Image (cartoon, rainbow, N blue to C red):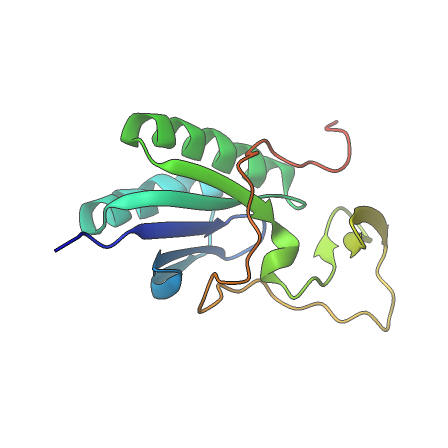
Length: 154
């Protein structure tokens, strides 16, 4: 009997922090917690590693909260080296129906074709919350795990 392959998805670019555990790309367990990414990730991963064997972790590399992206990237890159699992990244737009993502003040990130632009939210724009999908079948991921800050870091 083969062990199931567990994939973990981490959405840290908004509140609450969402983490999902998938087997064969189907959601089997999830976490939703309010607080700082730096406080929550170690706690959540301690629990996940006690219960599951992680083969792959997929994290949101941007756009979104720069601090959350940096913390998540450093934590998961370090953990992937220590625990020997594959680390992948993807766009936040994969998890909010490609709607606008909060940037700073009254500005939002928008996906227009293959480009990400920064502009004011329009009254007619509908913003969908981030959510863990029941299946990862249509989620596009990348082996390029560097953060995608879109704008220069200040």
